[in-house]
Amino acid sequence: MTELIFIGLGLNDEKGLTLKALEETKTANTVFMETYTNHMPNFNIEHFETLCGKKLQILTRKDLEEENGKKLLDAAKKGKTVFLVPGDPFIATTHITLRIDAKKQKIPTRIIHGTSIISTIISLSGLHNYKFGKTVTIPFADNFSETPYNVIAQNQKFGLHTLCLLDLRQPENKYLSIKEAIEQLLKIEEKKHQTIITSTTPAIGIARAGNDNPVLKAGFVKDILTFDFGAPPFSLIIPGELHFMEIEALLAFAQAPLEFRSLINEP
Image (cartoon, rainbow, N blue to C red; front, top):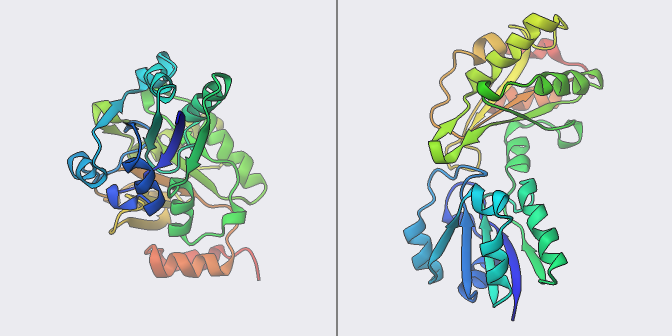
């Protein structure tokens, strides 16, 4: 049977794979995996290969973007092919393109979802999911952009929270830190003077979401800048209007300062 199955790996290690996903992987003719869209700190390839009884073929960004996933699609034309992706398969837009290309080439596809980085970060934060606005990625300084600042400003206009995903370059083992991300936003603030990001702006830093011991720290920007979050991956939330229950959650689980109670925007 020829088909391409997109499988989400979850966020931290091979134990995040669902039972259904493991069953499908065990019966596949070919198994591919990519590791560049998200960092899985404790994933062990050798243990995973033993678990599923298959040899993994690692695909690079070049394989999937510059070569349009040719290796993957050619394998799927010959037999059951599994493509393992950190998190949930279609959070990375590259993989949506692959599924469209498979459809054009008459290759049947299926999806087995994994834990999404976005839902995990929001869950950890204790903030209300329906109060999040547009998500944005903050790039490295050598690819500097004002877009993250503008998205935060747009979300704040409507009282919405902003989830900022921080850039990574997995082959180079480089991860944008929370400190570096905030410094970029402050640099734009110096230019625009819109008081969107200042030293007293509330912020929430998150490290290693999906790990058994994630780090969650809420505070004002001046506090977050000096906090040690440990190892990557990292994320940042700039909250909008805060409900009292959201603040209580931040006090209980994110080491928020008591001054956060003064931020309550709803009765």
